[in-house]
Amino acid sequence: MKVLILGDARHGKDTLAELLEKYYGVKYKSSSQAAADIFIYAKLGHEYGYTTPEECFQDRVNHRVEWHDLISDYNKDDRARLAKGILEHADCYVGMRCHKEVDECRKQGLFDLIVWVDASERLPKEGKDSFDIEMCNADMIIENNGTLLEFDAKVKRVFDLILSRKVIYIAGGMRGHEYYDFPNFMAKQKDLEDEGWEVINPAQLDLDNGLDPYTFPVDFDWSQPPPGELLPIMERDTMSIIHRCDAIYMRKGWVTSTGSRAEHALAEWKGCEIIYEK
Image 1 (cartoon, rainbow, N blue to C red):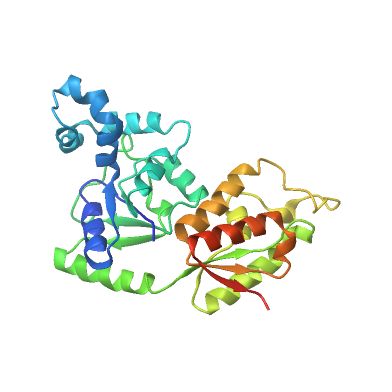
Image 2: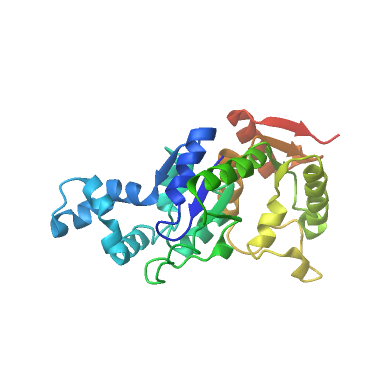
């Protein structure tokens, strides 16, 4: 499971990551620590007299705007660059600071869950010059306004429920079907959710990213790919299978679809459970 933890400074992001590692074996790495190791120490070490990346990391609270700007520049060509580097070695990314990076990570399907930790009843919020992410960018909010014991118990209750669900991807041909067969993909998503699965539905991902076939012209040729670049869609869907899925559901007729055959091979290579529509 890949988790992104967001929230204002000192609100408990690292504490949540430590609890996830303690109870569920979810390896984590702070974005700030990773950034210090990879490039920020090299940028700021001489200016501030740091002798190690760890010193640079510990002093970040005094230079948050600089850190924000340096990470934004590092990610300028691919807003998910740092996140992908961290996920090569960890399951949990702690402390993203730019909403554009969150949006790109969501677009590329890098995370199963985005969690916001909120302690605003007892701690101040950050300024927008170094942290421009809002609570609405997260999938869920965990309040941390009580004691550590209360937070610990709350985290365990929530993640006991979350981690009991497995993730399944719906694969099947789209081209050649009216509306790219979105109605049937949506219906199958509901069926699988009713069975207890967390579902990754490429049709829903398309809708979430502004690709809505219901708005296409009446005479649109459904045998053709949708307008725009296909490569980002391919990357999003394959990364979802690689990083998130326990299983893949192959809809009838999948063997005639080049994309579905590729997804099937990828899931088979990864060792996912493969379920075939009867």
